[in-house]
Picture 1 (cartoon, helix red, strand yellow):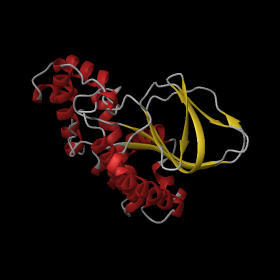
Picture 2: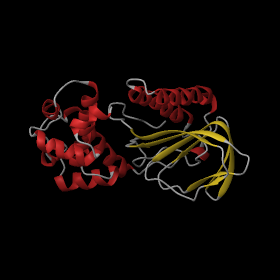
Picture 3: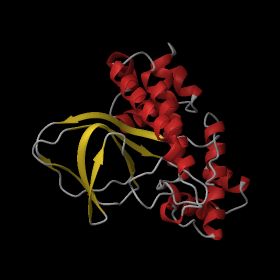
Length: 276
């Protein structure tokens, strides 16, 4: 069984796309630097991956780990209704960052198929409704879907399980897990790389190197992203001023906070409520 630390498992939803394709179409081979889940809600569609063309039908689900080339094909007369989910910031103990334990992109969900498919439709309706907090409801549904996928991917199935990382890499990932846990729970406090390193009994340079290798960014960059994510939620769901929100997420200078926020979201904090 692959272990997830629920207190730090916080996937970033890059997109949720409900898409009908009714035209003859051939997309070029492409890949992502994040996880993509594609679910056939209705109809039929062909996919090519691992140099093999596969026909998918209603209920079939693909999970592409980062870097896996694939393409979608719609011959004339073929229609499909699909749900595409892009996810990042996936941490599963014993596996590389942003990786699910499936070698074959075509998932065999077994006894979890019916529950998973119902969740897919529920997610589709939730995002199409645009009801208040639909994004929060959607994230909850996606977490349930990921749990169902993990339950179906048992290491006892040699054809559907990636090799786990080495013991040395496990130790590095544990270090990163501890760092993320601390950042998630203390993001509003003054935090430096030196303080984190001292707490974890490692040099600042080594901590930064290990953290960047696994997550793709430095600990302080990760901290900034956590703070800005919380700030965005506070802007949407509270009446606090920008200055008050800046202080709540760890910034004493509201102008510096606004500069970071605009750079990250390409949107000034003061405009978030106007847009929504």
